[in-house]
Image (cartoon, rainbow, N blue to C red; front, side, top):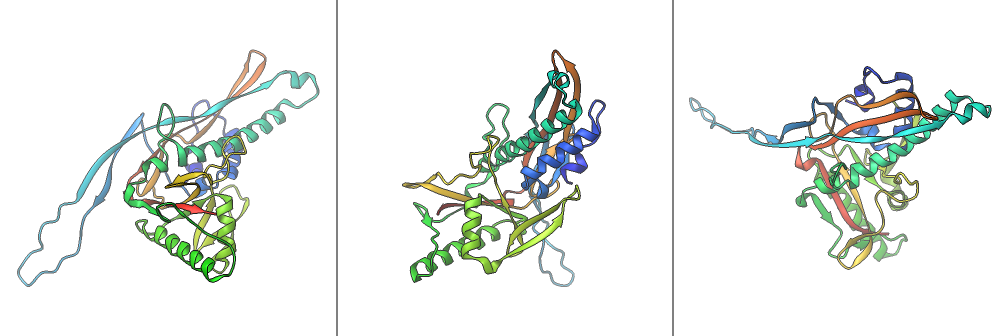
Length: 314
């Protein structure tokens, strides 16, 4: 299910504000347009991982199939709370501003920042304290594909050596996508990597236009039919969520691409209880107070639903 479907009404939340916040949240966090969420109850959820029944045998007449035992492992995820409090000073009223409009403007601006923050947490969260366990922490070592011991460059230009490096990179990219169980739903990279991919593989990239859940028109690139999602910037509006300063071997100027297959409590999924909620707390002291919160946990249900291509140098 999508986040909008799971962001249901609670006793004290405000539906009009929630709709505004959700739209702004996803505008800055396009990754979550593709993410699949599932509803859970309580603080934590236990689920089976890599549950596989190995089907497919042959038999002769009057002989039965050999019994097959499914492989079942269990893991537990705990919800973390992401959000913040917006305080709008009563002084705006005395100075001729419309309080409702000012609060809505601040909520929209905050929700865009929250979208950037949640994307950063989704990728880079290390699970310490109250942070999410992001996909960088969850990716099994067998799902990390490298450009080389010290990484390798993906240059521009049409020389034979540059073309060879470009082809090597595209082969690695196809390997990344193919390493995801059932093929990837999205590939995620920073804007510089997207620009380089457009430059060297334009014939494999198509542009599509769709309407999102809020009726807004969205334009996105796809590589071999798989949507390309920009990781964007962190909540400060400056720092890249996926940087060009990762260290691979002796080089500290590398970046990564991630391939993800989402599913509703399968593949890679996000657990929540009531989705994104917005609460109008009224006047507290000299401020109108609005609280925005999202309970979430990232659930890696199948270990081959995420993969990373590391060591890309631009």
